[in-house]
Every structure is written in structure tokens, then in C-alpha cells.
Amino acid sequence: IVSSSYGMAGQRCLAGSRVVVVGDVYGDLMDRVVALADQLVVGDGMAEGVTMGPVVSAESKERILAALGEAEDLGATFVLDGRNVKPVGGAGSENGYFIGPTIVADLDPRHGVEGRELFGPVINVHRVDTLVEAIALSNDTEFGNAAAVFTSSGAVAAEFERGIRAGNVGVNAFPAPPANVTMGGYGASFYGDLHVCGAAPLDFFTDQKLVVTRW
Image (cartoon, rainbow, N blue to C red; front, side):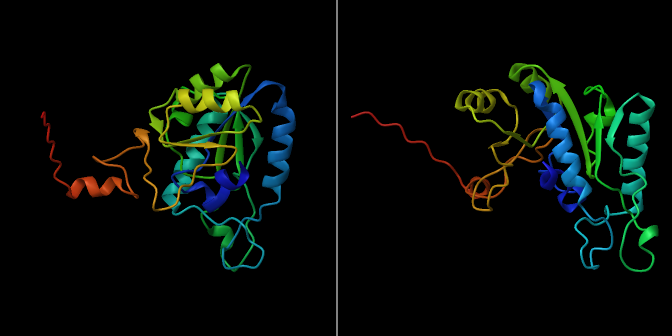
């Protein structure tokens, strides 16, 4: 969760921006995630020991901070608040576009703060009682790029694979397929006519011919 959500400061298409926790493991899981996130060192990527750099621009930072402020106004809980992070590194780092690892809870998943892609180091976390609820909440979005389930149950994994609406699915791993495998998202996470990588792009350059014969 930590490496998926905070790697590249959350600025990648397969970042795990939503975590749905089933059952009573919520407290223990959040303790572990926060402990690992607290070990990340935010700052100048050229500085020794830094493990998370800035977001890409001032506009990006302002957009993310505005969304987090809106979430706070709506009554969201900040399990981890990275808005006032003190970056380390070279001269001028404090004026850079830095946001620390952030975890937001108790926010309505249908609200726009979560419904749009922040593309930053922010996790929205939810608690549910059943896998059915988890799949329904995960699918309640116009986006559908990637999803993963972590479980020791084969039945749970199979139900998740069948029910989740995402183009890339992981079981006990985040789905980051190699370039020779066709990949692509669903819904608003898909743009164009064909998915990318693997054999799929070849269809663009291929004229199919169907021949039906009967002897």
C-alpha cells in the first residue's frame, strides 16, 4: 500500500489511491501503514536519503491542497496529514512543491474530493463489513484503472476478480504488468480505441478477414 500510493509521490496511473478495509483489521492495518509512511523522507530527490520527492508543479500542489482542505471542511479525519511537511535537501527545498504522505478517512466516497483523481500522495481509506460492500464501494467511481485484493482465501480472490470493475487486477500484489502484456483501464481510465502494450496495438494496423466455409 505504501509503495503503491506514495511511490513517485502518487503521480502514476496505477497508484493505489483508495484503500477499502474489510472487517476488524482496520486499526492494525492503519497503524502499520502510518508507521511505514512515517519512515519516508520527503525532499530534494538529489539529496542523500530522500525517498519521496515533490509533486510535478505549483499548480498540482495547489490543486491537491485545495482538495484536502475541502475534505477537512466536510468532516474528514486525517489519519496522516502531510500538508505541512518539512522537506529536506538542498537550498530552496522548503519552497518546493512538496506534500507529505497523507491518509484521509471518514469521507463520503461519492464526494468529488475522492471522485476525481488527485494524482498525489493521498490515500482515501474506508471501513466496510463484507467483501460485497468492498467491491460495491470500489466500483462506485467513473474510473477503473487498477485494483488489488490482499487475502489468504482463494474464494475471496475469485469473487474479487469476477466482481471488480478495473482493467488491471492484482491478487496479493499491485498490478504493474510488463510492457509485453496488454493493459488498460475501464471507464474514464480508458482513452482511445485500443488498450496499450502487448498484442493489442497491432489490431490498429490489422485488417481482419473472416472466412466461413462449408464443405
